[in-house]
Amino acid sequence: MSGPDPFCEPRRFGRGAALTLLFASVLVAGAATGSFDEPDDSGRKASSARPAPASHREDVAEAAAEAAADGKSPVEAAERAVSRSGDRWGAVYSQGEYEEFEEALDGQYTGVGLWARRERDGRIEVSRVQSGSPAAAAGIREGDRLRTVDGENVAGKPVTDVVSLLRGDAGDAAAGTRVRLGLARGTHAWDETVRRARLSTDPVTVRRLADDVTVIKVAAFTKGSGDRVRAAVADAPHADGIVLDLRGNSGGLVTEAVTAASAFLDGGLVATYDVNGEQCALHADSGADTTRPLVALVDGGTMSAAELLTGALQDRGRAVVVGTRTFGKGSVQMPSRLPGGSVAELTVGHYRTPSGHSVDGRGITPDLEADTEALERAGTVLSGLGDPS
Image 1 (tube, rainbow, N blue to C red):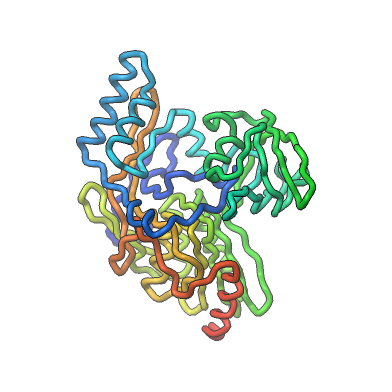
Image 2: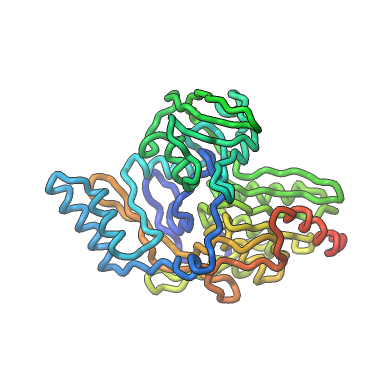
């Protein structure tokens, strides 16, 4: 960040990774995700996480310390304390899980290289296969159905549970370990055994459509993704309108989302947030080209940091938002170390869009509703916005 903008500097922690102000509670990019089921209205209203008072954070740390002293699991004790608090987005990680979490934010993971989504009938469908991954080498394709993982039926399971199965028990399966997948394509069903591998995520992809449209897809805000968005905008032909595709973006590092906002906003407010009662603000860098037509695509899987970016572009009139209502995750978690090296992330506040709207439990309503035809509608909108030159 540059300039005199007021900004509460996030604490840095563990191997130097900027993991604070992390609005996504589960970043599973790469293993098998990309889409979350959109909650119904009642779920949105009930989803607001209550900020954890200092006394509760002390309770969690105390529970973990007492368990460690008694020879019990500090992680399990801390999890029970978090559960009692009603903090929906609070989470406790073992040391190994948190290191893996940090690696995911750095764009690294151990897995097979497929993304999946749950269809309305409960089937798990492969939505993307990473090039050069074990899944790609095994011939698995987008649109294949994932029936089982190591013999366990995955139909009807949440995508996050499927992720756990693909990564191994507790997410600790090493590269080189085998996982047996039951798959189906049309009427053909078969089993495929693949080995997990260390892979790098590609959170930002760019493609150019006909009619002078550049689509920038951001799957997650991992380290470096903000600069990649800025580079993609700079490299796009000047005559092109931009579609910023945030569908299925489960969040990530807020600092990266703010950097991405700086590709479209010439300075100014991106969001405000409170941390233990202290009011803070996030601002974009100056110098962006604000004349280029822009559409942001969102859906029920657009979460947290991606919602922060969407809210800024919508409130400031910079983009037309097309799609379906976003997930509604607008709470701030801060990490703290527990005995034995485990980590608790507890909700300490909430953020608001530049117009003062709260996202948590509500989501963002698009300017134009569209589902399966969202990209086509985005192209139509861009054509109506005119030539940026």
